[in-house]
Image (cartoon, rainbow, N blue to C red; front, side, top):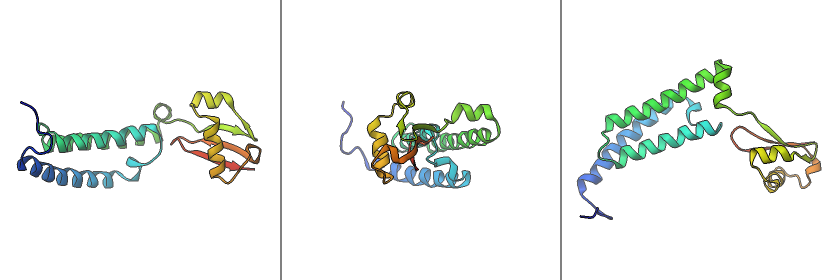
Length: 158
């Protein structure tokens, strides 16, 4: 027997509505309690946690085999782990080195740094686009372009 494509039952729809409202509400409470840093656009580590939260919420909503309490515990665990890692990374340099990257100069005094571009997998065109967004039309008019820890490019004019 095949699984229904468009509609299964009103009970399934009701479950998604009830569990969705409860899980979403509890997730908002947890995120507010944990502070702004939990969902910040800081680095790849934070992005992974954000994606994991979304994936967990989707699983709780759509999988009838995952009870609401287990899903909320999973969400709370992710939020608590994120909070613990960020707390530790501020206080323990070794932890900070594991989860944080350093900003990387990609252009210095108007010259593209080919080695840094290759290591960071950034193209010259992406640097030129950042320069244009920063109002500069020539690399020589920039003191530097830096790849920030969140993946954005910062242009520092001369």
